[in-house]
Length: 217
Image 1 (cartoon, rainbow, N blue to C red):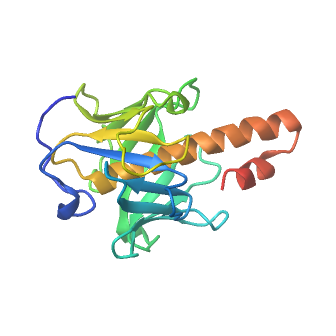
Image 2 (tube, rainbow, N blue to C red):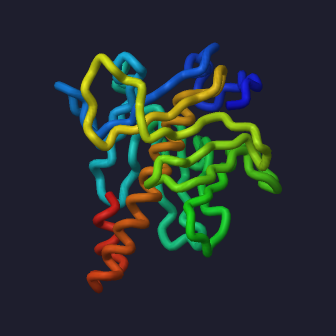
């Protein structure tokens, strides 16, 4: 991956580490279960966990060390581009909006997404772009509309000391990139994917849109 420096914090300065970082995302960490997903370092230490217990309500990315919500994630229902909004802390107030994630196009076969930071008021260009297929663990996060890679998903994770569930996957992050931001963004990708799968299953069974929404949470 590109070694360009990314020193600007998005969530908080303490999450901008001065070295490349590998995270693992797992539904189950041996002996521990937090929320829907646990995010660990290569030694199996849980850094964040994702709580999605409330249907059609905000999801939360929680700092495992403090138990304090770092990010609150909500979906904008009926949006043409399937938009998700991410807020700081336990808030969903517009003044605390941190970034927005939406499809690059309404019609697409892959889940290519654009990320707009709240500070990007004109939104002429996205701040980050996600390309690839989530179910193949091939998603890559780029800096804006450039070829600069800031994070990349991997089918395999690098955790060796702690057994993780069979569906665990890894994410490699460049130095000085805000790992809490990347963790939150990958969580949104996971939600996008599960929402799509639920919608497909709902359509096939004739269950309708409401059942698909319920299944995605």
